[in-house]
Amino acid sequence: MKEQGKIFLRKSAPEKSARMVETIYGCKWSLTVYQLLANGINRPGAMVRSVEGLTTKVLNECLSKNAKFGILERITYNEVPPRVEYKVTEFGTKFIRILDELEKLQSEIESEML
Image (cartoon, rainbow, N blue to C red; front, side, top):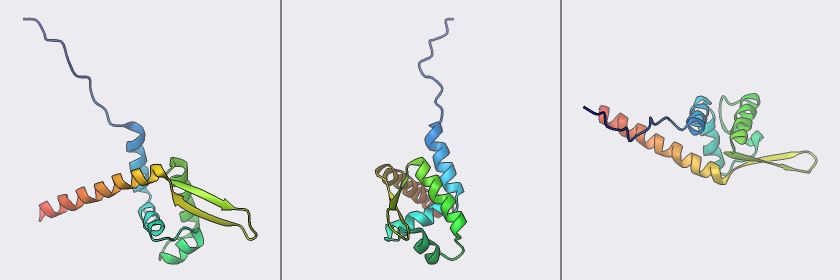
């Protein structure tokens, strides 16, 4: 008997985007930062004051990680004292929609377990 030719190649996970989702979910403050930005709080000092338990050091690490991925954009104003704001990029908007869908999926899974 002849073996039939294989039609499909092994499918692997999208490496970069999967790693990005894992990294962002691994940062317990990223989702909170997105929520703050959605509510118009875009300055780091205001973010720290708005969330109990959030420190400046941890926030700066989270913001720089998100900026490195292209999810957030850092805007620096040439003023004294210096002013920095963050905004969600166009890519970040798409990425956050994916996170929202994952959250909906989690809710469905939890409701099915009841």
